[in-house]
Image 1 (cartoon, helix red, strand yellow):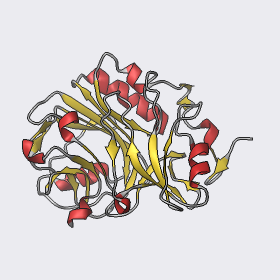
Image 2: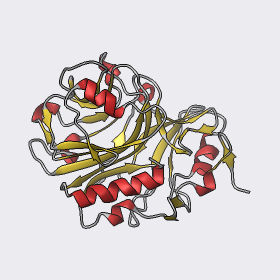
Image 3: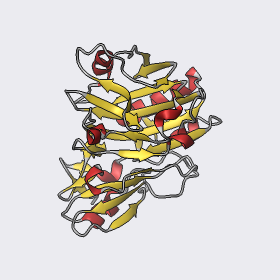
Image 4: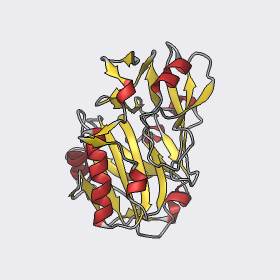
Amino acid sequence: MPLQIANSINISTWGVKEGGGGYQYLLDNIAPTTSRGAFSLRQLSSTYLGACIRVRRSSDNTEQNIGFNTSLALDATALLSFCGVGSGFVTIVYDQSGNGRNRTQTIQNRQPRIVLNGVVETFKNKPAINFFQSTSCLQHDVSTILVPNTTNVSASFVYSNQQAGDSVLFWAGQSQYAYASSAGDTDSAYSQMSLGGNYIDNVVTTMSTRDEVYNAVYSPTDYISHQFYNLNIDASWQNRINWGGYGILGGFIFLGYYAEEIYYNGDAQSVFTEVYLNQKNYYTI
Protein backbone atom coordinates (compact mmCIF):
# COMPACT_ATOMS: atom_id res chain seq x y z
CA MET A 1 0.00 0.00 0.00
CA PRO A 2 1.57 3.33 -1.04
CA LEU A 3 2.37 5.81 1.71
CA GLN A 4 -0.39 8.40 2.15
CA ILE A 5 0.19 11.83 3.62
CA ALA A 6 -1.41 15.29 3.75
CA ASN A 7 -4.95 15.30 2.38
CA SER A 8 -4.66 11.67 1.22
CA ILE A 9 -2.09 12.53 -1.44
CA ASN A 10 -0.55 9.39 -2.93
CA ILE A 11 3.17 10.12 -3.03
CA SER A 12 3.91 6.99 -5.05
CA THR A 13 2.44 8.73 -8.12
CA TRP A 14 4.25 12.07 -7.85
CA GLY A 15 6.12 12.62 -11.11
CA VAL A 16 4.65 9.66 -13.00
CA LYS A 17 2.41 11.52 -15.43
CA GLU A 18 2.56 14.68 -17.52
CA GLY A 19 -0.97 15.35 -18.66
CA GLY A 20 -2.08 12.26 -20.58
CA GLY A 21 1.43 11.10 -21.46
CA GLY A 22 4.42 9.56 -19.77
CA TYR A 23 6.98 11.40 -17.68
CA GLN A 24 9.73 13.17 -19.63
CA TYR A 25 13.06 14.65 -18.57
CA LEU A 26 12.80 18.37 -19.22
CA LEU A 27 16.53 19.00 -19.73
CA ASP A 28 16.76 16.12 -22.19
CA ASN A 29 13.93 17.65 -24.20
CA ILE A 30 15.56 21.06 -24.67
CA ALA A 31 18.92 19.69 -25.87
CA PRO A 32 21.13 20.89 -27.46
CA THR A 33 20.34 24.02 -25.46
CA THR A 34 22.97 24.37 -22.75
CA SER A 35 21.58 24.49 -19.22
CA ARG A 36 23.43 26.86 -16.91
CA GLY A 37 21.57 25.76 -13.78
CA ALA A 38 18.56 23.56 -12.98
CA PHE A 39 16.78 23.23 -9.64
CA SER A 40 13.63 21.21 -9.03
CA LEU A 41 11.83 18.70 -6.82
CA ARG A 42 11.58 16.35 -9.80
CA GLN A 43 14.42 14.78 -11.76
CA LEU A 44 15.09 16.95 -14.81
CA SER A 45 17.87 15.02 -16.55
CA SER A 46 18.41 11.35 -17.35
CA THR A 47 22.14 11.83 -16.78
CA TYR A 48 21.84 13.46 -13.35
CA LEU A 49 22.47 10.86 -10.66
CA GLY A 50 22.82 13.07 -7.57
CA ALA A 51 20.47 14.05 -4.75
CA CYS A 52 17.48 16.35 -5.10
CA ILE A 53 17.82 18.40 -1.90
CA ARG A 54 19.63 18.44 1.43
CA VAL A 55 17.42 18.76 4.51
CA ARG A 56 17.96 19.72 8.15
CA ARG A 57 15.54 18.10 10.60
CA SER A 58 14.24 20.07 13.55
CA SER A 59 14.67 17.36 16.18
CA ASP A 60 18.48 17.48 16.33
CA ASN A 61 19.59 19.67 13.37
CA THR A 62 21.12 16.67 11.59
CA GLU A 63 21.27 17.05 7.81
CA GLN A 64 20.79 14.43 5.09
CA ASN A 65 20.59 14.31 1.30
CA ILE A 66 17.21 13.25 -0.14
CA GLY A 67 17.04 11.83 -3.64
CA PHE A 68 14.32 10.84 -6.10
CA ASN A 69 11.92 7.92 -6.06
CA THR A 70 11.27 5.50 -8.93
CA SER A 71 8.71 7.96 -10.30
CA LEU A 72 11.52 10.53 -10.63
CA ALA A 73 10.01 12.85 -8.03
CA LEU A 74 11.30 13.83 -4.58
CA ASP A 75 11.59 10.71 -2.43
CA ALA A 76 9.02 11.67 0.20
CA THR A 77 9.25 8.27 1.90
CA ALA A 78 12.95 8.83 2.63
CA LEU A 79 12.23 12.43 3.58
CA LEU A 80 9.60 11.50 6.17
CA SER A 81 11.70 8.64 7.49
CA PHE A 82 14.46 11.16 8.15
CA CYS A 83 12.32 13.97 9.62
CA GLY A 84 9.91 11.83 11.64
CA VAL A 85 7.17 13.83 13.35
CA GLY A 86 9.28 16.98 13.30
CA SER A 87 9.89 19.53 10.56
CA GLY A 88 12.46 19.67 7.78
CA PHE A 89 14.22 22.68 6.29
CA VAL A 90 16.06 22.95 2.97
CA THR A 91 19.78 23.70 3.16
CA ILE A 92 20.66 22.85 -0.46
CA VAL A 93 18.73 22.49 -3.71
CA TYR A 94 21.15 20.63 -5.95
CA ASP A 95 21.94 21.81 -9.45
CA GLN A 96 20.84 19.10 -11.89
CA SER A 97 22.55 20.74 -14.89
CA GLY A 98 25.86 19.11 -13.99
CA ASN A 99 27.53 22.46 -13.30
CA GLY A 100 27.44 22.18 -9.50
CA ARG A 101 25.85 25.61 -9.05
CA ASN A 102 23.70 24.65 -6.07
CA ARG A 103 21.22 26.89 -4.29
CA THR A 104 22.13 26.97 -0.60
CA GLN A 105 21.19 28.37 2.80
CA THR A 106 23.40 27.73 5.82
CA ILE A 107 21.64 30.13 8.23
CA GLN A 108 18.90 28.20 10.01
CA ASN A 109 16.30 30.96 10.37
CA ARG A 110 16.54 31.66 6.64
CA GLN A 111 15.99 28.08 5.47
CA PRO A 112 12.68 27.44 3.68
CA ARG A 113 10.60 24.45 4.79
CA ILE A 114 9.85 21.11 3.11
CA VAL A 115 8.25 19.20 6.05
CA LEU A 116 5.95 20.59 8.76
CA ASN A 117 5.31 18.41 11.83
CA GLY A 118 5.76 15.14 9.96
CA VAL A 119 3.84 16.18 6.81
CA VAL A 120 5.50 16.96 3.48
CA GLU A 121 4.83 20.50 2.25
CA THR A 122 2.76 20.32 -0.93
CA PHE A 123 1.10 22.67 -3.36
CA LYS A 124 -1.30 21.47 -6.04
CA ASN A 125 -0.72 17.88 -4.92
CA LYS A 126 3.07 17.88 -5.40
CA PRO A 127 5.97 18.52 -3.02
CA ALA A 128 6.93 22.19 -2.83
CA ILE A 129 9.47 24.28 -0.93
CA ASN A 130 7.59 26.66 1.35
CA PHE A 131 9.03 30.16 1.81
CA PHE A 132 6.98 30.55 4.97
CA GLN A 133 8.55 33.58 6.65
CA SER A 134 10.06 36.91 5.64
CA THR A 135 13.64 35.68 5.99
CA SER A 136 13.19 32.50 3.90
CA CYS A 137 15.89 32.64 1.24
CA LEU A 138 17.98 30.48 -1.11
CA GLN A 139 21.09 31.84 -2.76
CA HIS A 140 23.86 31.03 -5.23
CA ASP A 141 26.79 32.71 -6.95
CA VAL A 142 25.35 34.84 -9.74
CA SER A 143 28.67 35.04 -11.60
CA THR A 144 28.43 31.37 -12.58
CA ILE A 145 24.77 31.52 -13.63
CA LEU A 146 24.35 34.99 -15.13
CA VAL A 147 27.69 36.45 -16.17
CA PRO A 148 27.59 40.23 -15.55
CA ASN A 149 26.97 42.42 -18.62
CA THR A 150 26.17 39.57 -20.99
CA THR A 151 22.95 38.58 -22.71
CA ASN A 152 21.39 35.47 -24.23
CA VAL A 153 20.73 33.84 -20.86
CA SER A 154 17.12 32.86 -20.32
CA ALA A 155 15.28 31.32 -17.39
CA SER A 156 12.04 29.65 -16.37
CA PHE A 157 10.55 29.57 -12.86
CA VAL A 158 7.56 27.70 -11.44
CA TYR A 159 6.23 29.28 -8.24
CA SER A 160 3.17 30.52 -6.40
CA ASN A 161 3.53 34.03 -4.99
CA GLN A 162 1.18 34.22 -1.98
CA GLN A 163 2.33 37.57 -0.64
CA ALA A 164 -0.56 40.01 -1.17
CA GLY A 165 1.53 42.96 -0.03
CA ASP A 166 4.92 44.17 -1.20
CA SER A 167 6.91 41.20 -2.50
CA VAL A 168 10.10 40.45 -4.42
CA LEU A 169 10.98 37.30 -6.32
CA PHE A 170 14.74 37.62 -6.35
CA TRP A 171 17.36 40.17 -5.43
CA ALA A 172 21.13 40.58 -5.19
CA GLY A 173 23.93 42.49 -3.52
CA GLN A 174 22.90 44.71 -0.63
CA SER A 175 19.98 46.61 -2.12
CA GLN A 176 19.51 45.70 -5.77
CA TYR A 177 16.24 43.98 -6.52
CA ALA A 178 14.42 42.35 -9.40
CA TYR A 179 10.73 41.75 -9.97
CA ALA A 180 9.53 43.84 -7.05
CA SER A 181 5.74 43.58 -6.76
CA SER A 182 3.45 46.17 -5.20
CA ALA A 183 -0.17 46.92 -6.10
CA GLY A 184 -0.65 50.44 -7.45
CA ASP A 185 3.10 51.26 -7.40
CA THR A 186 4.39 52.77 -10.66
CA ASP A 187 8.06 52.61 -9.67
CA SER A 188 10.41 50.45 -11.74
CA ALA A 189 10.00 46.73 -11.07
CA TYR A 190 13.74 46.12 -11.09
CA SER A 191 17.05 47.95 -10.91
CA GLN A 192 20.52 47.42 -12.33
CA MET A 193 19.38 44.75 -14.74
CA SER A 194 17.73 44.64 -18.13
CA LEU A 195 16.01 41.88 -20.04
CA GLY A 196 14.43 41.17 -23.37
CA GLY A 197 11.02 40.38 -21.93
CA ASN A 198 8.75 38.29 -19.75
CA TYR A 199 6.41 35.42 -20.45
CA ILE A 200 3.75 34.35 -17.95
CA ASP A 201 2.30 30.96 -18.88
CA ASN A 202 3.80 31.33 -22.38
CA VAL A 203 2.19 34.75 -23.00
CA VAL A 204 4.31 37.89 -23.44
CA THR A 205 3.59 40.06 -20.39
CA THR A 206 4.56 43.68 -19.70
CA MET A 207 6.17 43.92 -16.27
CA SER A 208 8.08 47.19 -16.17
CA THR A 209 6.42 48.63 -13.04
CA ARG A 210 5.82 47.07 -9.65
CA ASP A 211 2.05 47.22 -10.17
CA GLU A 212 2.37 45.33 -13.47
CA VAL A 213 4.47 42.68 -11.73
CA TYR A 214 1.87 42.38 -8.95
CA ASN A 215 -0.94 41.86 -11.45
CA ALA A 216 1.10 39.23 -13.29
CA VAL A 217 2.63 37.17 -10.47
CA TYR A 218 0.30 37.31 -7.46
CA SER A 219 -0.98 33.74 -7.60
CA PRO A 220 -2.17 32.48 -4.19
CA THR A 221 -4.14 29.51 -5.53
CA ASP A 222 -2.09 28.43 -8.53
CA TYR A 223 1.37 27.97 -9.95
CA ILE A 224 2.63 30.17 -12.75
CA SER A 225 5.38 29.47 -15.26
CA HIS A 226 7.43 32.66 -15.44
CA GLN A 227 10.01 32.84 -18.21
CA PHE A 228 12.35 35.67 -19.10
CA TYR A 229 15.03 36.05 -21.73
CA ASN A 230 18.14 38.07 -22.59
CA LEU A 231 19.13 38.97 -19.04
CA ASN A 232 21.79 41.63 -18.63
CA ILE A 233 23.12 41.85 -15.06
CA ASP A 234 25.06 44.79 -13.71
CA ALA A 235 28.43 43.85 -12.16
CA SER A 236 27.49 45.67 -8.94
CA TRP A 237 25.17 42.79 -8.04
CA GLN A 238 28.16 41.48 -6.09
CA ASN A 239 28.13 37.96 -7.53
CA ARG A 240 25.09 36.69 -5.65
CA ILE A 241 21.48 36.18 -6.59
CA ASN A 242 18.91 35.23 -3.95
CA TRP A 243 15.40 33.79 -4.24
CA GLY A 244 13.16 35.35 -1.59
CA GLY A 245 14.28 36.79 1.72
CA TYR A 246 14.66 40.48 0.89
CA GLY A 247 12.94 41.02 4.25
CA ILE A 248 16.35 40.21 5.75
CA LEU A 249 17.28 43.76 4.79
CA GLY A 250 13.94 45.24 5.80
CA GLY A 251 12.50 45.40 2.29
CA PHE A 252 10.07 43.35 0.23
CA ILE A 253 9.66 39.61 0.87
CA PHE A 254 8.59 36.44 -0.93
CA LEU A 255 6.01 34.21 0.74
CA GLY A 256 4.83 31.24 -1.26
CA TYR A 257 5.84 27.97 -2.88
CA TYR A 258 8.87 27.35 -5.06
CA ALA A 259 9.00 24.29 -7.32
CA GLU A 260 11.41 24.75 -10.22
CA GLU A 261 14.06 27.11 -11.60
CA ILE A 262 16.00 26.60 -14.84
CA TYR A 263 18.62 28.81 -16.52
CA TYR A 264 19.80 28.13 -20.06
CA ASN A 265 21.60 29.76 -22.99
CA GLY A 266 19.64 31.39 -25.79
CA ASP A 267 16.16 32.78 -26.26
CA ALA A 268 14.60 30.60 -28.96
CA GLN A 269 10.80 30.64 -28.86
CA SER A 270 10.76 26.91 -29.57
CA VAL A 271 12.72 26.27 -26.36
CA PHE A 272 10.43 28.57 -24.37
CA THR A 273 7.40 26.69 -25.63
CA GLU A 274 8.92 23.27 -24.93
CA VAL A 275 9.79 24.27 -21.37
CA TYR A 276 6.39 25.81 -20.74
CA LEU A 277 4.40 22.83 -22.05
CA ASN A 278 6.46 20.43 -19.97
CA GLN A 279 5.94 22.52 -16.81
CA LYS A 280 2.28 23.13 -17.63
CA ASN A 281 1.54 19.43 -17.89
CA TYR A 282 3.56 18.38 -14.86
CA TYR A 283 2.42 21.13 -12.48
CA THR A 284 -1.12 21.51 -13.92
CA ILE A 285 -0.60 25.21 -14.63
